Length: 110
Length: 125
Image (cartoon, chains in turn yellow, brown):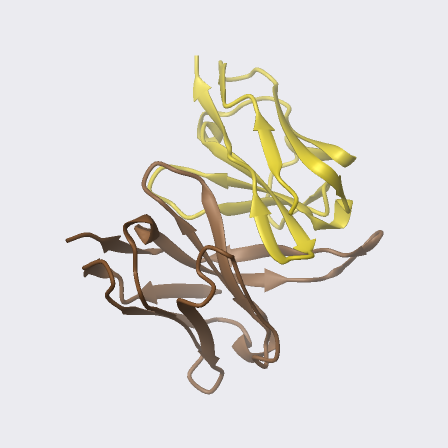
């Protein structure tokens, strides 16, 4: 079973700064199976990125995804106040079948 | 507008049972696979189960296999999760989510594009 490790656990930044979030897989993952979600307190997760680098509908272009193999990155080019939240990466596994989520990275206001 | 509304959560004793429902609207429910994902208080996301559009393919996380049963009624646009032999560690907000598998460069993508607001299940004596 593939394990996703997200780092850092918490990122303290100011609005306007650049955020770089890492998601590392315990073995190689198909880029098409890698997605990123944003979750704010008391809300359901929201899809940001799928296929490692494709933005979901309505997602601002300050959000970008990259990576391949075992290392994937979510970048927020300039943090807006509404971007302070927890971010999760997700991969789909074919053996065993199912989704795996990383432990999350909290982006907090410095 | 796509809407997913979960219901059926509540307080249940260890060893008890509960049935969650998810009412879908705003899309052709019978064309999509659906998933349940849970989140324990203050913790991360954990995938629970998935079911294909026609119920032909069903998968479970090891943590719930043999205790939980996912099902759907396409005529009623509804998804269900029957939870038996509940344990304290099953305490969580349970989300239903729509699965998407579009063709992407390099193969088929796999992600959850719409989520409900969740229903809280508390297992405690």
